[in-house]
Length: 112
Image (cartoon, one colour):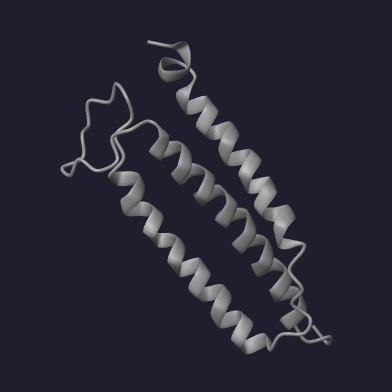
């Protein structure tokens, strides 16, 4: 087997997470929230945050090569699934968290 699939798989996932988290944080800077209703944007942001809970069962159903812990359902057995899920999770992590900070600073009254 290749070295990437053995030794470097998890460090590569960590690197991918950091890269796509940065891309998500950068992408959140291009969202213009000034013209939107703050209450409706808060609800959309909360829905996006809660929607990220779908990643927990997805990661639990993934079986990486060489792992002795096999999930009960054989759906995500290819090594590409952890990579895809990590990229999506990292991007949404950076995007939603940064938008939350931006929205919190615009929602706070000037007196505080």
